[in-house]
Amino acid sequence: MAPEKEEEIMKVKITGKCRVKPNKKLGRSECQLVTFDLPYIAFQYNQKLMVYKGDEYEYEDRVGKLKDGLGVVLEDFYQLAGKLAKDEDWVFRVEYDDDMEGVEVLEAKAEWISVEDLTVEEGTSTLKELIPYSGILNSEGLHRPLLSVQLTKLRDGLAMGLAFNHAILDGTSTWHFMSSWAQICSGLPSISLLPFLDRTKVRNTKVKFQLSPPDQNGSSTDDAKPVDQPLRERVFKFSESGIDKIKSKINSNIPSGGSKPFSTFQSLAVHIWRHVTQARQLKPEDYTVFTVFADCRKRVDPPMPESYFGNLIQAIFTVTAAGLLSMNPPEFGASMIQKAIETHDAKAIEERNKQFESAPKVYQFKDAGVNCVAVGSSPRFPVYEVDFGWGKPETVRSGINNRFDGMVYLYQGKSGGRSIDVEISLEAGAMERLEKDKEFVLEVN
Image (cartoon, rainbow, N blue to C red; front, side, top):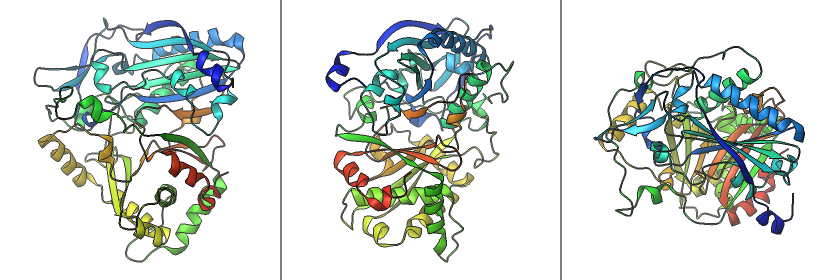
């Protein structure tokens, strides 16, 4: 990559902008946002970056193919081509009409950046320029596109930056859409799994969700932004053998009292939680919270299909004292995570929904918990299977939106199998200590 001084001068250049709509006329439709969607209205657009190899002569052809495929796949995922709306009672909905402008597609050039530059483990300022809508709140979907795509020509490839309005879809729906788009671009006549678009089947309560006016009792805009502190982002790549080692070690001594064998997620989660807590140098009596955003499609009653399009996730919290977490063996924390996940059943989900509906609130990042480790995304998402016809991505990353101290994104590893990439945001000092923690880093690669 160019030296830092040059990089500041050589900004990514936007060379074109257009809108893409479904190829067919679909008429008008609308669907209210449900209780599972509303907490994300005051968060920021969900950003993803996918980087593909290729020579400079392929860029125009790839852009054309992506636009053509987008027009086809939006026939089924038309809500992404619509916009947010609300009635006089502040009941939000997503609506689509053939007259709407559709998805925003930006074309850009940054031929001083190589694919290899973007596969580094450390977060870089360059990533911000490759993904649209940095710092933009989901509530702005009232007058902005619900999906913006930036296709940047690199020295030796293509960077695809995506900004999804998190108020209308979660990670499962995001990667369902991306996989479907890739299927069309790869030559399939239709997608393999149609989205289930009627979100009111899971919840049909009309919730009045009035966002706080700016600068009044803490503005909705300010509440949604991370606290201004020096954060570092880093990807730790855990190999299949490293994951197996962590899981085997923690399952060698399963506590009595009802614990079952720990899953891969539970084993890796407590590994991260314990070592991040240690890196933060918390006092033994300080509380620390582990938060996971869990898919509820199979937890609700009746269960929803995997193809349910929308948000169907809820945050599950586990809390303990830093001293207890660190001084006890890892199975102590893993048992807490396991119990919290398993007890979040249809009844618990219903109680959480009723609580929100009785007193809707604008969530802030601090609501994830004190000294938290909060896990989003999932290594089960097929991010490296998104092949538009020119190979699998070289890397998949999150953007700068919705980051705060302790935010973790899990992705399947590029090498496949049980490998997992762990993308962590931490205060700079804690990150430096985590990188030097041999027991944590020992399991990497």
